[in-house]
Length: 440
Ligand SMILES: Cc1ncc(COP(=O)(O)O)c(C=O)c1O
Image 1 (cartoon, rainbow, N blue to C red):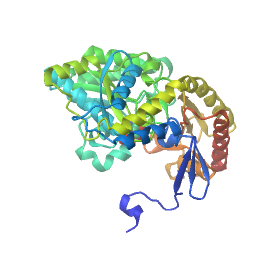
Image 2: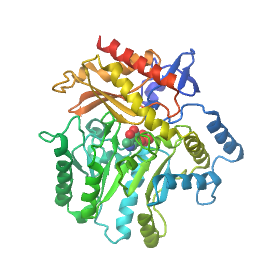
Image 3: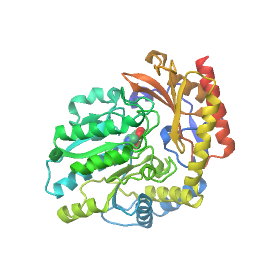
């Protein structure tokens, strides 16, 4: 049996990766690929960074992992302090894991345990949004408004209620501009009322939607409005920052930009930048204290929670981000990169929208700019652009179906925070070439 068949994805024609070098990946033929999207926005400081590799090697040469209930370690303690400091003074607890799905799963369990600890075990329902992705485990998939990925598992998913996506490019009918946020707040309010506030544990959203929307930042005032609705009904607010967090948008937590403190934050991807799988569910002091008071421990976690070498990787990545002031660079250079992409693509009438925050930029392609009508799904436009870019030595991330009903094409750009100006210029040039070649 072929390896492709055994692992369930097609390896035919894929180049063999042999090396990383900063913002580049290099295959067995020596061809270089500029990493313009960090794969799926994961590789926050590029590849094979010698300081991160040295930190991991040093840890491995001592011990790979001290099991969490038997040992503590310096990387575990220092990374925990760093994450809590970066999330802000309201946050006092976290649970480590190895992926974004687990971080979301952990967020769901922390919310449920908190309400149980408060003597309200009936608060066990979640509200999430359409056009969202929260992960592939059954709990996280239950929260995901992503029909194509849910379909084969639909009967085994949790009963989650969905409200509308918040998308200024594709607002609700008759609710563009200032009318959008009040309408979405009213919709969440009505949803909580219909499920019954006594039954709702939390509302979950991505502050900037990633793979399911093609980088869709929440409209101004949206997070505040959702926070007020949740507060009014005693519902927790969970921010899924797996893709948009850990500095990707130019603030360590994406919610910092909104000026709103959520109750729980899920982080992963950029935390250890892909050097070793690492994620975390970070939550407010008050939630953790209530749980500890009632149950004595946080009842979620895994064998490898707080894996020593993974924490050493995360710590090394995060220290480089701090030392080299990379978040400030992402903020300022990100605005410029977005402007450069907009200018480079301006001549293509099919580019409907260029949007995003920091080094998290989405480009939406439409058949008609005025009506925003998407291309037919059969055309596979975003995948074709991504394939052409890859052939030309540029990695970008295609999103299809972001406009609903299986339609829509978008491209995600998410370079390493430490990419040089020359690399960002190459990114823009190759991106334009791939778009032009595909549309021609
Ligand atoms: C917002 C968001 N949440 C959760 C996940 C799941 O993360 P993972 O694939 O690491 O399990 C993803 C993955 O793309 C994501 O974008």
